[in-house]
Length: 262
Length: 343
Image (tube, rainbow over all chains, first blue to last red; front, side, top):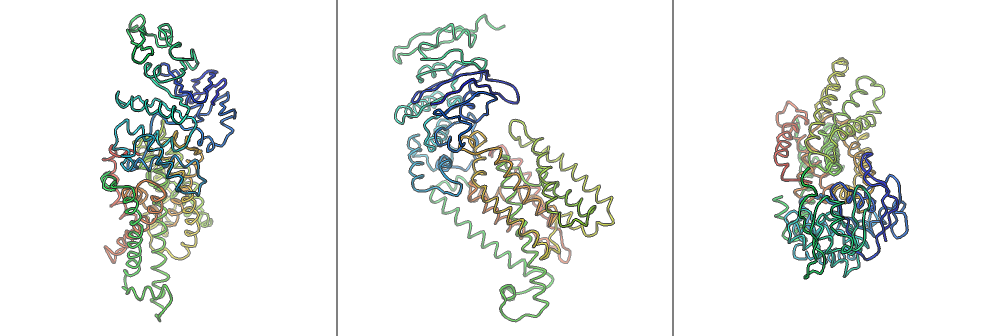
């Protein structure tokens, strides 16, 4: 689905990604994890063409993403950035309607088909009852779902989410993760996300990529990839890893820093 | 915010209320239009005014001259300039994603005025180039403020500071020119304070085509303006070429403001007040916001000019001074409540 080859990218001349290779298969939930500053978000931005790469190529279904028209890409791929901006008077419906813009020529306006898709997107994000409320008046989790609804209105095949749960409390975190899983399972949307919470990553993804210093240091099924040696290498922490019988997946419990505070 | 809540009864209701605002504001504009032609040293009836403009009935030559050649062109200039400045401000607020952006604060107006002044005082023979040179001056000083204010996005405080600094330097330049060429200043004096006085048809001949170009281009960029409001990453995600869109919108904003400045001089705060009120009335969707701002801008400046002309009659105030007196406090109020409103 998406393939990045020898990606080199960064900001203002500072290189963050160093010849990074990444391949994401159709239909998977893929999570990027790694310490702060490791380049997770940069990977996400680069493979979604939000950030130009210095060298290397990104292929979306075999085609170079930088040679495709950016509007054509927007019909297949939707990104939810980490920080969001919006005028305070926009309602959920007005916000979600923006998702139809890539499907329009510049003179076209919202039609009946679009309205159907907008309503469908709002319904999929379970926000029907809040459709006419200004987004700023919603809770953190509802707000995040409104943005996901916007992405859905693009009718994408791939959805990329940059830390969708970071500023949310535990209930809203679950709410968003459940929605993401639902979108993957019921609608077949490929999901690529950046998460900080290791347990969330292990529990909800088919595949994880562990990133450190702009390189992929491990990848594969989370149950196999995450072990105490990896956590020591990548995060510099000692952790106990046990298998939870209810979830049937490993749970990471951090014990302390390797060698204490230096 | 309060407005937004009051309007959140239901999206259809809200849409209706917003659409009703258009005939309402057009009504106010028409009323002010008649009022501004009516008031002056001689007063006329509405019947006389309409008769002269639409060419029915019999009138003596003085009346026709006063209405057609003195009052009507001035009224039209006020309307066109008001629309230009308001649209310029609305576009800048999208480009900078900040409600404090307006042609005055961002250096556009002072840049345009210094450039225009240079031509008028130093190279009066090239008078016809004034609008284009003003546009170049406006673009350069806006670029300067933009670069100074940019640091991982635009910080409102940095815009204010950069704007103050750049405006001080350019304003100083204008003062210097006025001193050096004080012998030629006579005709430029009113212009410096922003005034519609003595604007006639030949001003409109220059102003109208440029303004039409600027306003139509602005309308064509509504989608870009809407997308930029959602932040750069989201706009890129939705298929906008963000850098290109920024340059285009900034250029159009600089152009519409520069054309206005080169005709009537410096008139502040229209580009700040009008888009702000329009947002409260019709919301932040540029498909409504931009046309509404244009009409409200016309209305506001026409009202202000009529007031400036008649309040202290027979003394006529430059409308720029009136706008500064009204607009300054409004700007301070916006600064105070900035924390509550983040675009």
